[in-house]
Amino acid sequence: MSSYAPRELPLDIRLMQGTSRALFWLVALGCLFVAGHWLMQRNWWDIRAVRLQGDLQRISPVTVRAEALPQLRGNFLTINLAQAQRVFESLPWVRTAVVQRLWPMQLVVTLQAQQPVAIWREPGSAPQLVNAQGQAFTANLGEVQGLGLPQLSGPAGTSAQVLQMSQKLQPLMQEFHQTVATLAQGSGGNWSVQTRSGLSIDLGSAPDSAATQTRLKQFMTLMPQLEARYGRSIDSVDLRYPNGFAVHLQGVDLPGMNKTSNKTPQPAGRKD
Image (cartoon, rainbow, N blue to C red):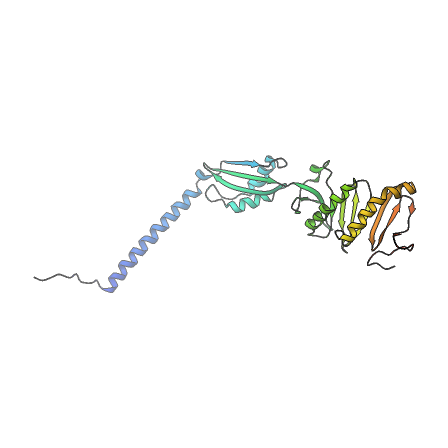
């Protein structure tokens, strides 16, 4: 009994068959891609609603829709959610935005508003606001009138540092019924503060050092006695002295006070 073994096809025929199958699948995949692309571009997938939620206290939905929606690209299927998030976060008063798809054909945008804690100024730039994280942001300052926000200033990029210093000084000021109105860091590193009562204080280059804090407390303790003694309010005080401070009264110059000497001490790091 003889067995039959099929003959192997020649190499060129096998290559032609393999090429034909490959071309078939390439064409099929291409057709699927074109059909899918065509379907995705149909207006069936247009975004029909954008729903805003979250903290909208200072964020106007009308402004968001007018300024953000024209910048969005794509439809429900093709929109880049990360790019859409950046668009919403570029709007005034928006700190963070989370953009999600919601069937059918909607976007849900969850917004977190900026919480201003101070007004920020730096050389060569328009005034901005500072949030609780120390980040400067641009918004209409007229919207915070009446909030009594402190005014901070310093070199570019130092808003977080200046805010942190303000937060360190504020509890000490409150011990003496004072409130920080302005705090400035100069280009040379010196700090100065003005209270809401109008008192100006030169803090030197290390306002949070133990020595400066001690001098500040000593002055604030003695201030009522000095004003009572001279019958005038104190306009300003210079704490840049190693062992004392110098004050200026309205209409009167008072020499620097030194606990250990009758000589007028020189500010630390300063020469006449």
